[in-house]
Length: 185
Image (cartoon, rainbow, N blue to C red):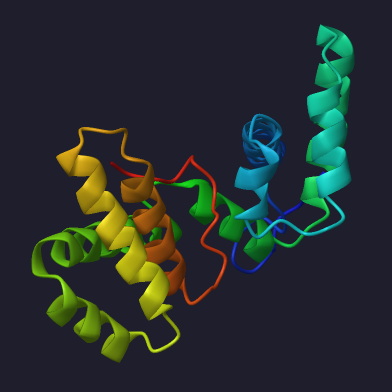
């Protein structure tokens, strides 16, 4: 029994219904996480201790066993603090802060790609001024290859590669060989 404060009349702890709602929310979050790929999981702020449980949940396909493993995953997740779970939810939420940053980075990379293809060396110099870590030679080569692809009506391989390179520059990393999941055409 949770009891009441004699002076204020407020309850000491959340009701059983509230506890159940919170547990079901964590279970739902665990189910979402178990449906993600390893690349998508790597982008989320998931504690290292939860990753093996998520992978195990994905590995099990028998209905009841999967449900049992999902409940175990939710139990492990409830041991994490609320801030960690909220950060995971925010990163998953398309309308959340992390989602907005991701979309903004995508639009900046697309905008720079279009500017480089239309403007040439002047735009490239401006990009290098903003992001000195960018590889000028690689970007120039990708722009040249993309324009050549367009002339010959070839598939947009360099077009996509240019996007990935710009995205890596915008994010501050050097690994341009990112996943195909987040590329825009």
